[in-house]
Amino acid sequence: MKYFPLVWSSLFRRKVRTLFTLLSIMIAFVLFNYLSAVSVAFSMGVDVAGSDRLMLIHRVSFTQLLPESYQERIRAVDGVTEVTHQTWFGGVYQDPRNFFAQFAVEPEGYLSMYPELRLPDDAKERWLHDRTGAVVSRSLADRFDWEVGDRIPLQGTIWRTRSGNTWEFTIDGIYDGAEGINSGGFLLRYDYLDQANSLGRGFVGNYVIRIDEPSRAVEIGAAIDTRFANSPYETKTSTEQAFVQAFANQIGDVGTMMTAIMIAVLFTILLVTANTMAQSVRERTSELAVLKTLGFTDRRVLSLVLVESILLAVVGGGVGLGLSWMLIQQQGDPTGGLLPAFFVPPRDLVIGVGLTLCLGIASGILPGVHAVRLRIVDALRRT
Amino acid sequence: MSNRGTALVQVRSLHKVFRRGSERIDVLEGVDLDVTQGEFLSLMGPSGSGKTTLLNLIGGLDTPSDGSVTVSGERIDRLSGGKLSRWRARHIGFVFQLYNLLPVLTAERNIELPLLLTPLSRTQRRTHVATALAMVGLSDRAKHYPRQLSGGQEQRVGIARAIVTDPTLLLCDEPTGDLDRASANEILDLLQALNEEHGKTILMVTHDARAAARAGRTLHLDKGTLTSGAADA
Image 1 (tube, chains in turn yellow, green):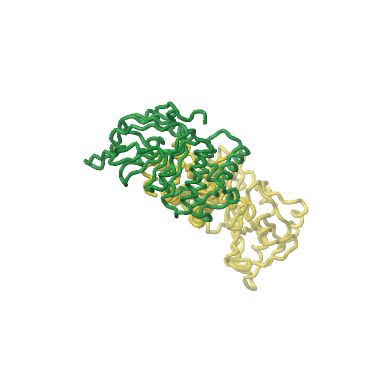
Image 2: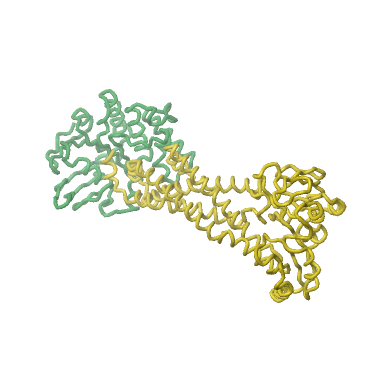
């Protein structure tokens, strides 16, 4: 601690340069946390998917609709215990930028299929008796300051009513997901969509199927697909985990992309910090020589330079990690519920702190070695 | 004070050779020198005569090509690395021509630097710093940064830093070389007081004959050789 004033003063010898370096490091670690959260979001979707749930979509694409009449035929397949469906609504709330996921579902069947959605009983009761009702996730309600009883207008971009494209829903309840999990966004009733839309009736987006034995998933899925083979609406059934993974893979290998971006960002910031430290050490060649003259050993001088660079990295990185962690905790999923989860896991925070230390050591080691190699008489001669 | 008269520094057959490419430069050629405990010795000579090199070798900042340097009975030419650094911290106080204060630290923090290497507590360090500041007459400038001080004041802070650990030997390299006459006289008065009142052994390199005259003895160095023992003052 007795060397702290010396290290701190040296660090802020060029205030503007140090502040800009701190800002660069801070932004890099803000990015680190956000990239971690995005990476988690894409892997978490796979992790939270139920192992006993199958997802059935149109064989051509998941955007193609399927007949509602399939529900009973699917239920008849051996091994199937529950079937429900969900249909992408795709409405706009006030502004297209206010994007969030909306699905038309069967209230009872859907809540039974997804017990991880925790909706109070009174809210469930209201929803079951309110055809134009909807339930929303906690994060979505917080985002728009919605409360139970609010009327929410959505402009239909896919589904239109017979009188136009404005749909109105009453919020009957707000549901919570498991810790850190968004679990959807805006759930409206399928029967309302089916009866009020002008496109046609009896079609759904995709089916969610619960099976009795997860180990038989492939077999049951094949049996279902065989049942609809050579029909106008052929199907493709996979486990929910495989479906979520395939959906994520359509965007690309998100984990690898995030890692590549993180490496690029951290490498850049390493160069920036190392440059700052190198300049800082070069500027005070004579001062380091004076310290050595006074009796500071090479090891002590190296330690001073390293502590300085570690302090720079830890302060900048710590502020960045802390700030972004708070923002992510408070604001949650920036996509408004499209991602299944959006948070920084403690493991990644620990890695982040470790990286700030590594950055400090890596950026200070070369200037430190330069300081150690400094010959006192040569350095003093330059003053 | 009781040790006054015994040889504190013994330099024997000291050689220092520098090489610039294939060129060999003999800076010191067999220098022999004794500095007694409590002595104020000045070393004069033209530029390039080897004065600063000799000072650096006695202070353990550089290693000789040949010969020996003994300070307080210890062969410092045989020390290296961390041992030499620790020896310097214990025994040597340096005063530089350009003061060489750290601009980011206040006067008291600059003076405290050598004490950081000791096991003294924060309170003890503060007491030592206050004493050193009082000795150089700058108690009221403790919180000032070097840029807020005059050249003479900066040099006094430099001297305070050099004496704060109560070193065995004070080495001054042109301590008045960058000062006006009045400030130079103040610094020389201070050095003289440190020698006469506190018994500090001082070896001072200077170009200035008037500065050299303040010392008890003056030696001349020319082309790497001590050319005269010069009369005692």
